[in-house]
Length: 187
Image 1: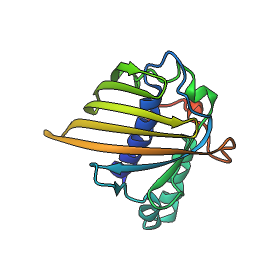
Image 2: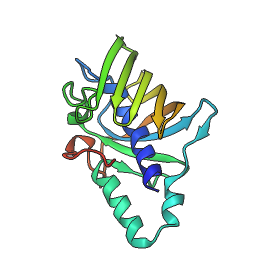
Image 3: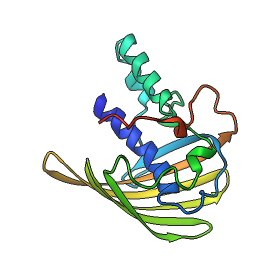
């Protein structure tokens, strides 16, 4: 479960990092609650529904993981593999996400237009390289496509993801904004 949780977090945060990586300007999207659907390997295969995995856990462990994720701005109760994330103005500010998670990643933006951004990221832990593109359909919808090559336990693997994001509304309810995160993601 820990690996699956980290994968989900990584996928969700890839969307945010992708849309704001090393930005000199904020991405052209609205702050608020966003619903995110992650598909992998270009096959329209959805990421596993985390709520199904959580149902099979002991109640204490499930509550702990759900609380940890909400504390970090991620609500996994969307069902059908969808997650919800709260991005307030602080989450979208130009200096908030510099493509660097605690000094482990370096991101170079190769293109930043009014409707699309492209980048290349290299991370040391876990060792990954990602090429990505965010396409901003309008202020309430964007799509991120990434191709990530990673080495885990000596094995190199390439994963392609498509992350479709839609704005739900300005009120995030009980989901804390991503910008309120003070500590790094769990490893």
